[in-house]
Image 1 (cartoon, helix red, strand yellow):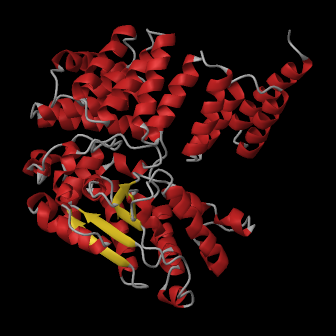
Image 2 (cartoon, rainbow, N blue to C red):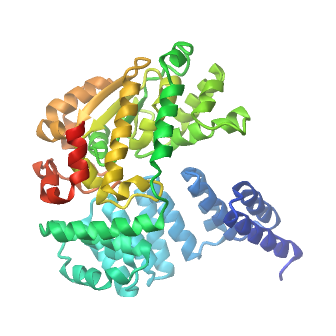
Image 3 (tube, helix red, strand yellow):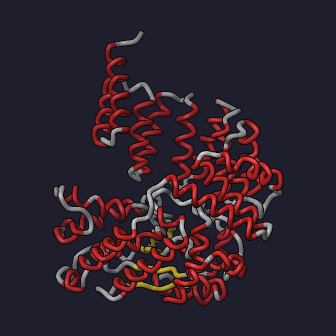
Length: 491
């Protein structure tokens, strides 16, 4: 029997999605909550809340909403898939695998579930299992281009000759998002064959598709953001706030450009028994951009709000960070590593909240680093990563900001150079452990044997002993990399 409450709940649910589409996130949240008050026995509003929280990087809160959805609709395949992906995003590998298997029990012919299983297998370094899952997804749905892209990236581990032919045949006819997916995968496949001209052309197709589908990188806005950071976080600013923040030495921040060796550095540290690798957290970004709400100020944004934070509020920010970043760490570790490369934007907040934090700055030859960025399918906010000229420009601005932070407030910054690390892993690892305050442990040299899940594009590199071919990879593409070579010569 359909009750009046159930009908009203449905209306509120539909209102939640309308508000979400209109950009009214707070209104959408309230509507979904109202729907649940009237009828808590359906999964849809819980899914709506989970998606809102996931989009706001509240990953654990999203996972809890999906748990509630499972309780009320245990046979809902989509909820099982979403919960599996939520577990996966937070590193709960066994939970994720179990939920994907539950989804397959309910629907054995779900291409989406098999694709999710393939991605999970990649995260934990199981190449054959990943390939099998991707191929099963494609056998069910030939248009499952996410699975095709995943397969194309496994050319080092399995024979993908038939998938290369599939990708070549369909690439130009795909919509932009799928063209980018398949283009990046095809580039990796050609690179495995040492067909560098074809690889670069595939990467170029992928980047062109992404650029058409996103906003163009705005250099003026980028320059203004850097200058704003430099102006706000001056030596005088920190002199006036000396002694603020939490004195904890637990946080370790790994920063740098993407593809600069941050995953390798985290994997080394996370192989130490007293250290937990938390992955790429968005906690600092959330805390920084949330300062207007904390202050009750609507007409200012970060970093201008830094000027208005009290000592007590900075202490509160540091407490919130320690809680959020350490949620999955055991009580036995003394260091928690936040490997979000773009946290270099938030070193001003780190200096305020954690004056004793250790900051590991990863650097790499921009010709290799920039090329590697160009070959990866980053999220839509990284519009600078689709064009070599923009990558070079971004690198120069990032260097300017890092130079500023190196010279203020005594931030403890240790530079880890990728090329040196690959050549002298033990020397670099000893210096790294000494810097973060950990005793030497031989297990850090076996980082590639770790069974922890790795969800970055470097997932396969960090599971192998170090190899020298990662250095000077750019020479294979030298004829195409004029902007990066010019940037090096100018610097």
